Length: 242
Image 1 (tube, rainbow, N blue to C red):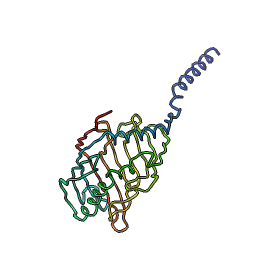
Image 2: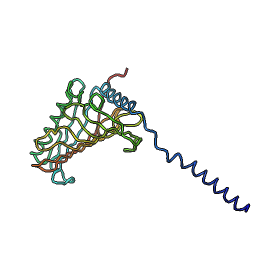
Image 3: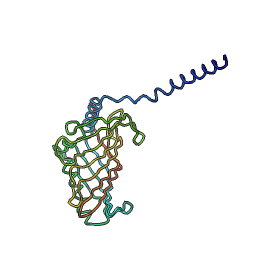
Image 4: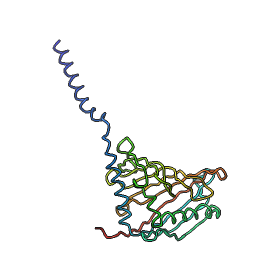
C-alpha cells in the first residue's frame, strides 16, 4: 500500500511538472495593440519619405508569357534615379526579346512609375492610414526572411493609381515594410489586366527599399503575363537628420 501511494505521488509530481512546462506553450501569443502598430507604420513611412533625398538603383525587368517562367520573352535593365523634388527618371542600360512586349508592357510600366512618383501625386499611394483602411491580422508574430513581422490587411480609401488591396507585412520592431501581396487597382498596360502583385523589401541605410517584385495579370485576349523586377546596387542620399 505504501509503495502504491509513493508511486501515485510520483505520478502527481510528474504531471504537475509537465503541466507547468507546457501550460505557457498553450497560451496564445499576446496580440499587439492595433492602433499602436498602425501609428508605427505611418511613422516609418513618413520618416523614409522625409529622410531620403535621392537614390539610384539598377532594376532588371523580365516578361514571361505562356506559363513559361524560365525563358523571358522580353527583358530590360534600367538605372533608376529618384529625387525627392522631381520624382523618378530612367536610363535604359540594355534590352532584349520581343519589341512588342517591351513597347506595350515595359515602357508603359516605366511611364506609369514616373507618373505616380511625381511630387503631389505619390503621396496618394503611400502605405499609410490616410490612404488605406488598415486592420491588424490575428496570429501575432510571423517569420518572413528571418525577420519577425506583423500582418495588416489594407484596403484603399480612395481611387488612385497603384493602390493595392491585400496584405502588408511590417517589421515587428520598427514597423518598416517587409512584404506586400495583393491586387493592383489599375494596370499600366493595355495588354494586361489588373495584376496580382508581390513585393519584397529590405533595409538600406535604415529604410525599406524594394528588392524583388512580381506581377501576374490575365487578359482575355493575351492570356497570362508575368513581370518580375529585381533591384540592386542602391545608392542613397539622406537629408540631414534633425
